[in-house]
Image (cartoon, rainbow, N blue to C red; front, side):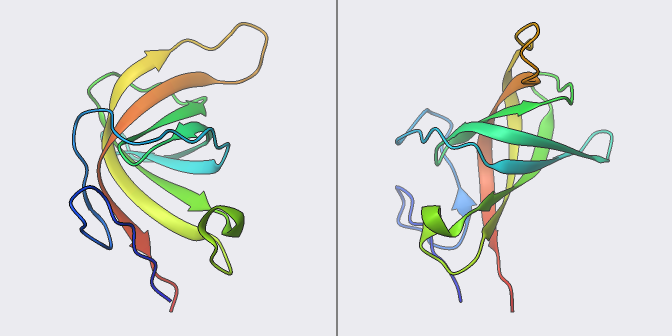
Amino acid sequence: MELAFAGKSGQERGGLVSEARTGKRFPLELPIKIHRTEEGGQHDGVTGNLSAAGVYIRADAAMDVGSTVEFEIALPPEVTGAKENVIVQCRGRVVRTDEPASGKGEGRGVACVIDSYDFVRHE
């Protein structure tokens, strides 16, 4: 099964995303795996909202503005209409960080722009 994501350019199956804020934001709390390219290792977090151009993440990992990041988001069947989770691998950059709200246990907020993405196919 192959899922296609049609963006503004009509390009399917991954692609580049424009710099500007575009499209609707979805307030989805989904698990996310974060791979910081400068240091290696993996961190877990949760999305706060998601759009075709970017994602807001709550995680314990400290990330610097301007740093590159790779992450995987598992989109559940109720979001995609597929029979199982759809994994999207994204590459992007940190554009904003927010300190955690004291005492709420939500982790640090990180806004990332998505430069490119690909869908992971399960054969």
